[in-house]
Image (cartoon, rainbow, N blue to C red; front, side):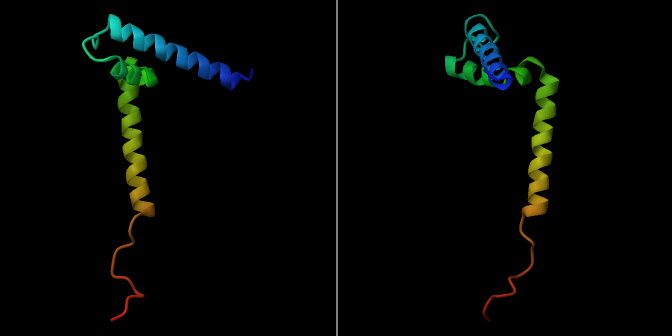
Length: 82
C-alpha cells in the first residue's frame, strides 16, 4: 500500500471518529448524523477555527483572482452585426 493511501485512510478514520464523537457527545450533538459527518470531512478546519478562516480567505482570493483573470473583458462585442 502506498503512503498516500495510508494517509488518506488515517485522515478518513480521524474524520469518522470526530463525526461520531460530535454526534454523540459534542457541542453539535443536537444536529443530525450527516451534519456531523460533513464536519468530519473537514475536521481540521472545525477543530482549528483559525485554519478554517485561513482556508475560507484563500478560497475568496482564488475566486476573485479567477474572476479578474478569466472574467468578462468588458466593452461591446466587436463581431456584432449592426
